[in-house]
Image (cartoon, rainbow, N blue to C red):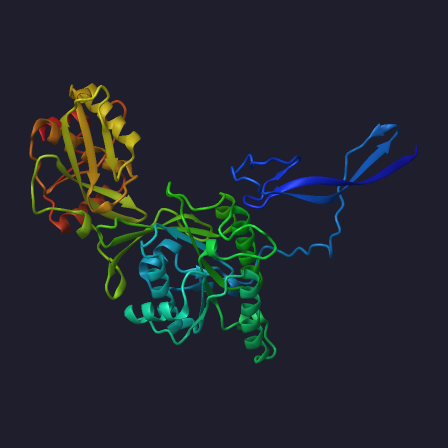
Amino acid sequence: MRCERIFLVKSQTSFVCSNCGNVFASWYGKCPECGEWKTLREVESLKSKVESKESGRRGRGELFSAAGEPAQFASLKQSPNSKLQSARIVTGFGEVDRVLGGGFVSDEVVLIAGEPGVGKSTLLLGILGKLTESIGQVVYVSSEEEGRQLEHRAERLHVPADKILFSSEKNIDNVLKGLDELISNHASRISGHESRVTSQIKLVVFDSLQGLYTSDHDSLPGSLAQSKEVLMRIVNFTKEKGIVSLVVGHITKEGDIAGPKFLEHMVDCVLFMEGERVTNIRMLRAFKNRFGPTDEVGFFEIKETGIHEVPNPSQYFLDLEHEAVGKASIAVRQGVRIIFATVETLVVTTSLPYPKRVAKGIDSKRLELILAILKKYLRLSVDSYDVYVNVSGGLTVSDTLADLGVAAAIYSSLTGTVLNSRELYVGEVGLLGTVRKTNIFATIQKEAQRLGFVTIHSGASINHISGVKKK
């Protein structure tokens, strides 16, 4: 039986959006994906398709490309000296290392984002200042500031700038060429070693992703296509040279990182810095971390002299001095650390057909669930009231251990009962009104006693939400 292969090579026309990078089979005046006008460009590509016929039957299609050398495969088991922990680069900030899982890892690309003015550049300058003492020279690429501006800020923050190499080049291709020369020049002075082992430049900051561009795209810097291409080149360069790259990203008005979700998939770690403008407290969270945890939170305080770690963050979120209607103390988990905070509630008669439910610091859906439980089992007429809930200090709580404290604070505000500020409420409230016990009660109890709490209300002492009335 004869086997026949037919090779079909044909020219195919497609249209690529210069803003978002999406490809379409036909031209549109307005991009269906990103909504920009007149951004589609015609491109021609060759599509090679191979069809197999055997015994008069069409076989599976095969795709061939002009590839280079075949890929090489090696054992996943590495030598004992190449363990991940030994390759960590400690930042000098215990809170940053906590979030990262012990420090940066070689070949790692970290994307850090946050509101404008939240302190991203201040934190990065502080990290660079400490790293220059341990790893030598570092590189800061800024597409938004000039050298004299960064130098002035470094002096104000008391960060030594003599070992920070700076560039304000905005073309990513020129930036990477310059970095390659820096690394190659240092490696050429040391014979008998590979460049990625002896490279003096171990860390580079790119500030910011949306300010850099490549001339291969005719779209403006900051567009989706530019951001994707720039980040891809940074990632490839980082993996090739064995360095650490910190990339600053902008955010949208909704609070998400600007650009497609694809950007977050490309990097190894996504850090988000948040905090209220009216306070000096800042929190650093990891939304993605290939080499560490994602449930840890780092706490910092912004001062005139720079950014400083907060070893005991509970002191900023807890108010034990004043007792008032609608206040309750809670304890929640932030990674392996226990944070104590004060929940404040305001319950007022509504004049609207649908009462307001405003939650700041806790999930609004969780608040509605707690109100439904209070209505069912405590017979509270919550439908006649607007309910406002706030976690003091700008802390965001996702731990369900805060349920009991939120319920107690709402009950206090609605009934006019003043709760003792030295009493702590800890426990998750189920849909049946049961208060569940926690397996970290001993840890919470030990820390609570140190802070001066005299009573802890939890699943061990209150097995149902109705017990709040008796407290």
